[in-house]
Amino acid sequence: MVWQLDFGNRCTMKSVQLSFLLLAALFSSSHQLSKPEDPTYTAAVVEHIEAVGNSPRTRTIWASESFQKIIREVGDVDIIVFPEHILNSQATATFVPHENQSITPCYQTDYELFLIELSCAARANGIYVVINVVEKELCAHGAGSDTFNPCPPTGVRYFNTNVVFDRRGRIISRYRKSHLWRHEYDSTSVLRTPDISIFSTDFGVTFGHFICFDMMFYDPAVKLLREHNITDIVYPTYWFSELPFLGAVQLQEGWAFGNDVNVLAADASKPAGRTSGSGIYAGRGGRLVAEIFEQPTTKVLIADVPKRQHGQLSPTFTPLFTPQWKTQRLTGLATYRDNNVDVFESELLAEDFLSFERQLCHGSFCCSFAIERKANSPAENEVTSSEAKSYRYRIGVYWGNQTTVIGVDRTEQATCALFACTDVRTASCGYIFPENEEVINTHHFTKLSISGNFPAAPRGRRLIMPSTLNALFLPVSVSDYEWSESPEAANNVDKPILVDLKLAKSQNDLLTFAIWANYYTEIPSTHNLDHMQPIHVTSPTTSTTSASSAISALWVLWVLSCLCIIVL
Image (cartoon, rainbow, N blue to C red; front, side, top):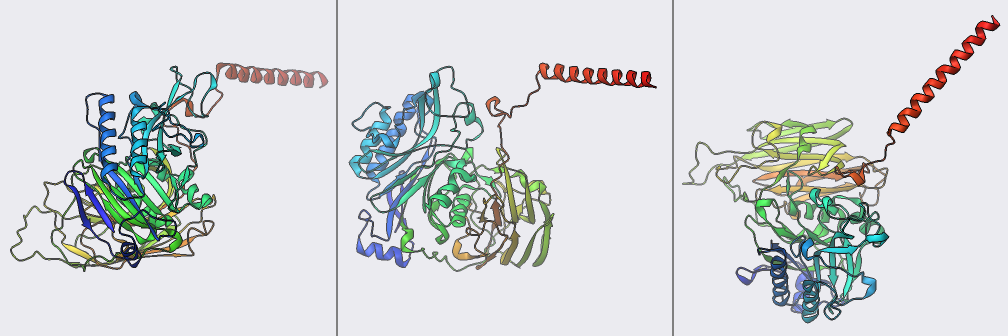
């Protein structure tokens, strides 16, 4: 079962996704708590608006009360995940005990009130609860953790931290964010050795967890999967969508698919600030439920998630394809543009093309494209302005490390892609037409095949995933495309992998259709921070010493030349 609770409209059932696995769970136990032997568990993720209030304290109180209300009203779920950056700030930061201390804040009350209240809410409702907080730690006189940045003059440092409560309200896991986002580095600490945070549950699933931007890095995100065999990930985030490859749901589903793991992703909701998009994903079975919003929205998404030891979930089939002259578009979410596309080897496709085949290379890395389209026509009585716009398309190829993730950290990536542009210029790619523009689909895609031989990963670090997007900012359903790897990428990181991605069903309004690979560069990013700069010895003393050495050498040469003259 897939449920969606809208806290503006109370509890409503939005949709039911069919699969033999989920139907069996439905008939055997109508939304009861999962047992270890059950084939599924019930998970909830919360998309949540920013807190309301005229001071940090009132905003934290408001957010805590909202979280508690959601926990009370969510019903029979096993685990619920809340987003990043909503609950508190440094002004209301809390100490967070390590899980080894076996602390239950509900009655061990040496913490901020909201942590106590949410511990009690988890216990009262018998739910595993995952929250994200601003944590504080004392660090004066060498106390506290080993971090990159020195202890501030106040003697208190701060972390961006996940906290996990079990059904009794006990803290059973803590994770401190390893890869911060721009301004976070100004006041938030980072451990020199990233946390590997794992927790087990009474329903037989062991989770790993990390936060937002961590998803773009090997350690700890991929290390949890490769070195600790984690199959289920908890993911609070405050993601800033970037086109054409890194929209929130687009990335979440692609990462879950590429790694073939379950992901519970809870995002904040501030569409004007580029933030929205939450979902629950079943690896290569695709999304169980996901939404992205144009207006700030608080909503709970619920799904029965297959336990991986019981096998993979089959993708849910989508309705029959119908060519459409106009389709619904999502335009209220602001986005970043991926400036990396400017250095791709790319080619503009003709405005009215019906068939196209090409091999395009960036250096030695080549991708093959085979594309076919058919013309659309407006429905009877459908009026179209003479100023109506249609997207242009480019194919693009890239392999290298002169790229970034949203302009924050360096990346090493390989990409074979088709992406939409608003005009003929590469500079227009990664943008969409605004709401006030009328947009039509002059053609629909009937065939779209992309393949590439992705290089080996000599450091053993590589993730190859589909990156697809339609006009609603949702990925193409996994039942609507075919994906193949030869050999299997996950078990052959030291070998080149031939990857094929092709449409299995026609599509009207594609924004992106790509194979996107992250090679997890080891090139460091110092973020203009003094304490992260490499040490170069360039002091005046060094310069003087070098000058003295040069003078001494010249003096020795002069003496030797004099001796030669005397001998002669």
